[in-house]
Length: 304
Image 1 (cartoon, rainbow, N blue to C red):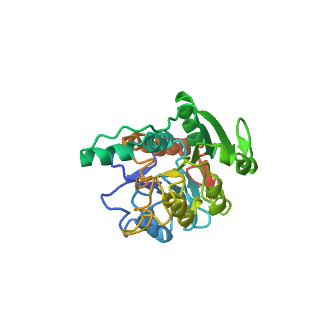
Image 2: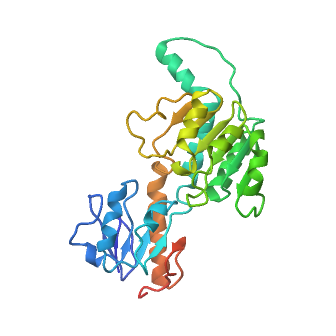
Image 3: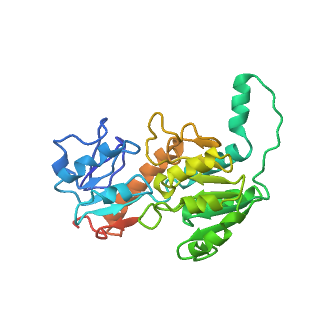
């Protein structure tokens, strides 16, 4: 089986051939022979455009945890696996960084430093804050453990309410009591616009919204209105639209810090992403089921 990935030193089992290239996507001459495709990480839609011309394609191993964009171009009969677990540490780390930056006033500190002024001001702490984490998967659970290490009171929310999580149906009642709301839920028809104008208006005065999920889970226009009122704060690693265009009013909104969708894109990705692909190939070679199958048929044989 031929696999295309971004890693020239990928270790593959006997019976597999590794293809790679310096370009964003495979060359046209390679497309018809690729059976396993690993789109280059953080390279945008250009990595997905060639999929329709991969006539031998059997498996797509996405380097991302979110896969809504790949589903739109997934050919019938092709298995899609996501990278659940690969980005947990980096994304949780960034969520905490955004929360600390916003809660402790780092953006104001930096502005004051650039202006050469000393302004002593009281800022709220994460300690003793009430934190809601919407999305109780691996990343949400990891963020919860980090928040608890800072002595915050944490409540997880999920659709099912399994384990220690609350059901999403309880969120609206509790929303006005939270000092920090962290979004790390998948984007789908149900979650699109989850933080609506109505929910944003219910947020506690002075509270913080952290979005490390997907931009469209928040109503951007409503968020801008709330931010410019000075009532709430936001730390955003994702936006809607994305990339955020020049001159967009979110850039100049009050009380917001924006990072350019770098939650999983840290030095931690390289080794973890490569290992996931190598582990998947080993499973195929041994006849075992693949991990992280999110769409398409289950694959557990090299000849499948």
